[in-house]
Structure formats: structure tokens, C-alpha cells
Length: 209
Length: 209
DNA sequence: GGTCACTGAGTGACGGTTCAGTCCAGTGTA
DNA sequence: TACACTGGACTGAACCGTCACTCAGTGACC
Image (cartoon, rainbow over all chains, first blue to last red):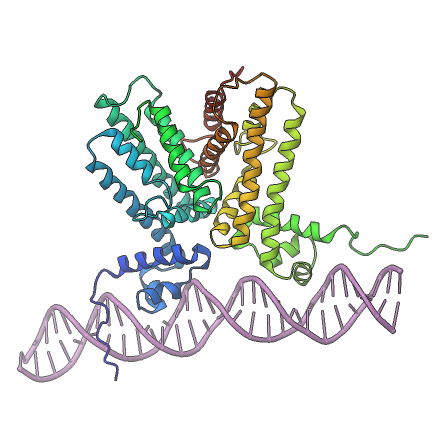
């Protein structure tokens, strides 16, 4: 019996699998992610995963970059809604602190960065991809700075926007790692304070905190 | 006549295995590290590894913390040799940039940090260990700052030494990740420049660069 | 003789990959 | 409308290499 109708309504399987994979990776970690888990999550056989992606590795890389892509786009969209550069900067900072906002915990997103980094150590394709992804994030910082300088909201006599963005972005990465790993000293609130502080010092605007 | 020694010269096997494990992890990555590899590296059977450590996991955690320990101690020793605080600070910075000094590439050390972080995501013991290790590094930064203030070499009117150290340490982490992953924009030299620059700005001393 | 470091041959589980075959939608044909 | 055929999505089971871990045994030393 079991005249199994095509259970799933024919949506884009490729997409569906990538999303499931990203989910599994955040849940169990890259090293503990099995094809079976991904298959289970979209109610499909392991064979089908390979049918679409050829190998586990190809899927993993795609899932990692896809997930990062998504959160980048979400932030981009958010920022564009704010008219003032200082608002954008403050929001950008909020959206960089893992665990600060209950509605966007970002813990998963940051955990995926760690996985990307480790994989990039030995996988040249991942290394290249990682650089692209990272560049984009730093760019959106420097865009906010330039935007503020253009509108006259930020002073224009400070350092090069790209340099500030790199420096600031690096600090955010370092702090986020600690927060993500549940450091007892570096809490989300403290990271948030530091970021606001440093941003204002580097860019030269004053917040309304 | 003295009794003939064992085939293996009786050195502390425990130690030997931990060192071999650390080596293998840096070579192949945590995920690709097999007991067999470690056994091979110290010319011993896989059984013996388990005989000493009970499980692979226990050995891995010990190896990761051990390796970190070693490089911390090495830096500590180095710094103590320098009389001037500014020299200490400059050396500390040199010893933080992966791939800057040919004699201490530090690439391995930083790669191990990445592995520690990922593991700490899901292993509470590793998370705790990671915090201890990290705290120590940050502390040695703030010690240098306090030392410089004590000797009058650094101004004492700037921010709290611990705060500066955390902030600076976080930035170093973030930059080091990029350098480690062969970023085309963030080279060792550039990271070095940024670090010197930021350190001088934060601490308020002037370098002789 | 007893203990301890150590070996090496298992063993069992796991998990990626393969593959032969099933099911079905669509298409062409009469 | 009925039927045959095709190609692609999908399954389930089997395959097979890999590894962590076990254990019975060995030889050296006290």
C-alpha cells in the first residue's frame, strides 16, 4: 500500500535542504552534523541529500554561507530603515552583540562564524568565501560612517572610514567570541557598552545613551 | 653494570602523548585528529593512548590547554626580560600577530584558539578552561599597563587598565583571526601597525617606531 | 610472583556513499 | 479518453571504510 503521494509539496528542495542543514549545524555543531540528521529534519531520505549535493562537504559549505548571507541581509534591511546615521550605528551595534536583544539572539549566527573560521583553516574554498562574507560586514560599518559624514552628522576629520571599520569590526569579533562563550566577565550588556563607547571615540559622534 | 633500560627511554609518557596530540591537532585540525595519528607520532600503539587517558576526548582537552599554556609561559618569560614598559608592550604586540616574526609564527597557536572556541561552544569543561586561559592573556596586558603607570612611563590619567586590556585583547583576537585565515587585506604588517597605533592611543604612550 | 607499561589483534558501531528500483507527472499517440 | 513511454525525484537497503575502544597476553622489572 502506502501510495505515498509526494509528501512534500514540491517546494524548492535544494533550498529546503540548505536551510535544514544550517539548522542542524547550529544545533549540533559542524563536526556532529550527519547527513541523516539533515534528511530527518526535512522528512526525506539521506540518499536524496546526496542526490542534490553530491557530497556532504558541498552541502556544508553552502549551508554555512547561506546562513551568514541571511543574517547579513536582515541587518542591511534593518539599517536602511533608519534615517539618522547615529541611529544606524547604534542599531548596528545592537545587532552585533550576541544575546543582547531577545528577539534576535544572534547566538546561532556567531556560532556559525566560529565554524566557518575553523573550516576555513584547511578548506581554501571556505577561506575565500569567509573573506567575502567578512568584507561585506566591514563594508556595512564603513558605509554607515561615510553616510554620517556625508550628512554632516559625523565629523569628517577623523581617520579613514575603512580603517575605522576594520578596527571596530575586529574588536566586535573578539568581544562577541567571549560573550558567545558565556564569559562571566564579558556579558552582552558590557560588550554593548564597550562598543558604543569605542564607536563614539573612533567616529567622533556623541550618543544619547 | 646498570640495568638495561626499556626500549623507550622511560620519559614521562603522559607528557609525551599530550605534546604529540597538540602537534597532530595543529597539523590536521581537531576534527581530523585520530588516536592512531597521535600514537604514530610517539611511536606507540593506540592502545597505550587509551591506557593513559581513558578516552580520546580527555586527551584532546588536555592537549589544547597544554599547548596554550606553553605559549603563554613563553611570552611571560620574554616580557619579564624587558625593563621598559613600552618595550614590553611593543613585544607583547609583536608576539600577538600571527606570522609576523619568522622565529615565532604563532599560526599554530592561533589555530588552536579557534579549535578551543568551537569546542567550548558545546563542552562546558572546555568553556571553563577557555575562560581561564583567556583571562590570563588579558591579565598580562593589563599588568604591562599597570607596570608602565607605576614606573611613570605611561600616563595614569587614562581609563582603567583592565578595561583597556579587555578592549585591546578583543581587537587583537579579531584581527588575528583575519590574519590567520590569510586575509588579503589584513596582513601581519597591517595588523601590527593597527595594534601599535591603538595601543598608543589607548594607553597614551608614544612609540619610537 | 606480582605489577606495570605496553602491544596488537580484534570488535562493534557509525556514517558517507552507492545503487537498483519505485513512484509519478507530463507528454506523445491513437 | 485511454494507453504507453520517459525522465526525474525519491527511497531503502546494502556496502564498506574508518575509528574509538576492548582485551588477552607479553615481557621487563621489583
